[in-house]
Image (cartoon, rainbow, N blue to C red; front, side):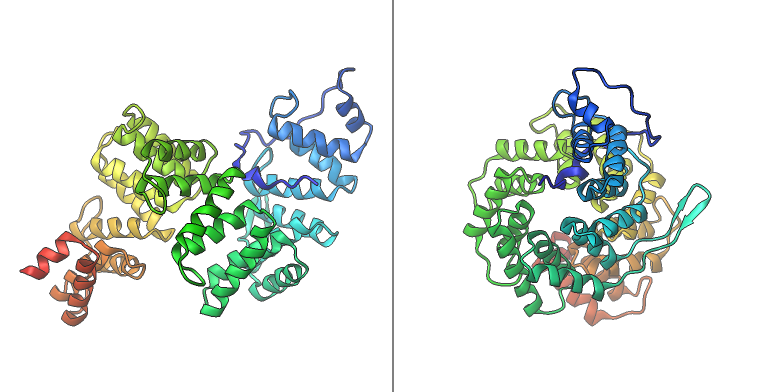
Length: 419
């Protein structure tokens, strides 16, 4: 059975209008069968149009057309594929609520991948959406119910459910026992050669999540995920090669893995590839190419991209310096929870750059980032507390934060403490 795991990596069509199917050519038997209401042929034709297979030009709009036809004829996999198109806006207007309904129907009718996906969406909930003149009501978060659904599926050795349940446990991080359960679930999924589970288990082993660090085994699992063409794993393996962590340093191979992952729409890889363009490492120095990649990652709501773009506009890399535009990007990233953007936003408020000076706002954002152990924010918050800038004085806490930053090798914190 063909599962549709990599759909998020397909570029969305700019057209959401449903196309009428043209008459079939005599030499196209699959299209003839699809037009004669053969559900399997409709599903296969949808997949061919989606991925540009078997000589067909990729056409996401036609892919959605045939997925709908196959779903109407009872093909649950087609209904699941339609949900993925709806969720990511591929060949149809993006709607996570419509996607949830497609997943829910397919899952309740007995298609496990759809049941897992709908459970994950139920865990987080889905905000209300405006569709033309109709408001689609929100899907309320039901964490307990979602976990119960996935737990029951995991108990039946459903590989995808085990992996998704492990990911949700990582979100909760409510106890060491729960994190240990993460490893067990991922080990079972990885044993079935699930690429994403292999990558996630590798990260647990490399970072010591749910148990002891096992660098050698972690690297081995990551390599297996790379062999299975998990593009996130390629990016992560490239980072190991870049810094020589668990593997010999190989900057050229690191770049190549990053390039492949970036070309396949992995946001973190796009960011790193943008850095390569800005520095002129392994590619021609091209700020415009870097900005294009950063903006593409922003469009995918990747938080770190906002601070990258903020720095580009703050310093005028390849564009005219624009402090106010930088401030806007920092604000967006900070609200998305990126500690780096929160730090830069705090600095804007502290120094009155791109916005009127507001010391209390600066302290607010430094606190946010420091809570995530952002080193520079710990230093800045420490100074504010010692001097009573934007907040009540608390010299004891201020010095503790400065010491924390200094122990993390922040040179400015070391210098301040030495004085």
